[in-house]
Length: 237
Length: 244
Image (cartoon, rainbow over all chains, first blue to last red; front, top):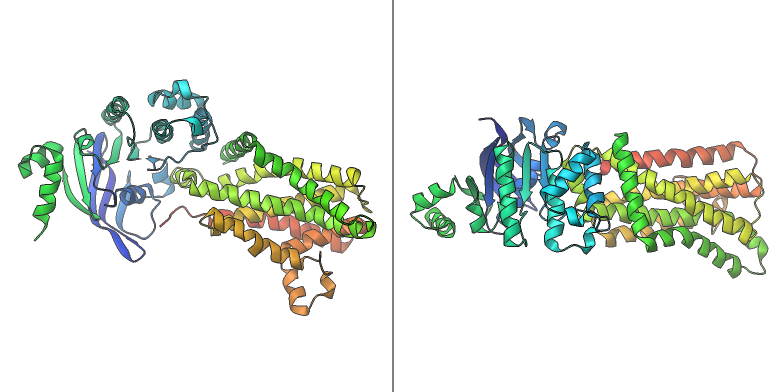
């Protein structure tokens, strides 16, 4: 299978401190990968490096064969940052239409993105009047614009109600089945269960790269939280 | 590229339209300040006639500098700038869109301050009215372009606002408003020759005095007009795609 994301020996320093060290993984087309780890483990830095937004990057980071951050790579990537990067003083539709115009997506694509995140009823409302979960969905809709081949979603389900979270995870799975390479970060283990494959990150190092079932079997545990804990303990001398 | 310029200009104008207080301040502040100056010099008509034209250059310049730099900084601090730069959008298109939107807002602002000054406060202008309009517009655009450029060097809105005293006030002191430039000490005179606001203020005072299209006036016009695209181009270059 074609690898849409290829990361080898990714090391990032920030203020003299190593925040990522020798991270290596690849993500094929048509897959749903969970980037899992506690807050501060380096998930966002991995996302930013793949999106081409991170400074002081060592190692190889390629998207669809192109160097991360290059013009060709940027054409392929949809990125949802952790904080909702939207214009609070504009309406939902104005926000999405603007980003659509910037990447050459027409108004049919805008309506489709709004429908996908179930914000049809709020389309004419200003983002500042929406709830936190709704704002996060506006941000997600922008990342979905133009159906990019690679989707980097940084904690897209934080603060959402369970029904909506379920809907979004179904959406992610359906996008993967249509050929998109998705990397979704989360610090919640029960969400990790919904991924085909997990990248477990801790203190800037990749602790494991396996399917949830494999992880549990290998560590002889019943749930991913215990599996994670067992992996951390194994890693210690 | 042009589609991105148009989309950005439209979006920035929509934001201005939604923020009535900011647009209101943008439109009326220069006029209110002109009125204050007029009545501060009540009974000293000649002083007002002398400094009035210079202030026509200075007030819109200052307001547009602050508005443009803070708007661009907000784009950075709310994460939308990074998001735009993660996609295929170019930095030039984004900055040009900002320039177009604020440039259009400036037309209104300068229209209001000129109407108030020339008719409301009976400011006398010796030269052509159209040259006054042209200079006032160029000066406001210069402030906007420098604001967009300087915003690349600020990380927070606190820092951006401090560029006003740090970057605008020295130009204010050396532009010839307080002391005629030819009476300054040599080093300061030389320094003021390198500050774009000096040409903006010189130009508008020359127009107000006589309005003859002399070589000196052409120099002022060309320097101010050239500084605008240069500042915007530098702004596009200094806009960083990658962050810490």
